[in-house]
Length: 122
Figure (tube, rainbow, N blue to C red):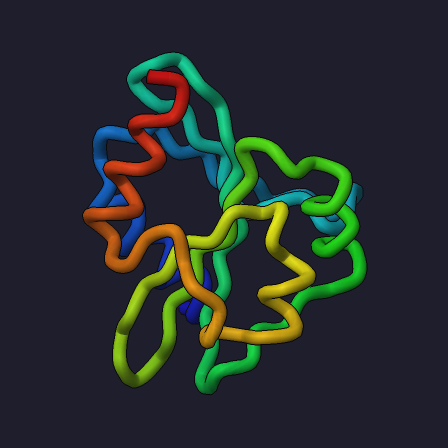
């Protein structure tokens, strides 16, 4: 199983208050990995990334998506080794690409990520 697939399984199991749909889109490059729907009836997207070091790799299509859609888009990153999970707002993708995991996240840990995503629109 690929690292991002394993990460998705961990997210789905840990953040059960969100209804998750895994998007597998080969025709529209850059589409985020997950579509979430919270208890307030708010839809949002999450791009999943797994990285070994500080650097996070994005395709030009992923960058374009988040630049064009700055609201209710997120990037969730798992650092292999430490197992740390960080959540970033999609509108910060250019900063995230430049700074990597040194950029301050809006959430740290799966539980905090779930609480923030569930509070959207509340």
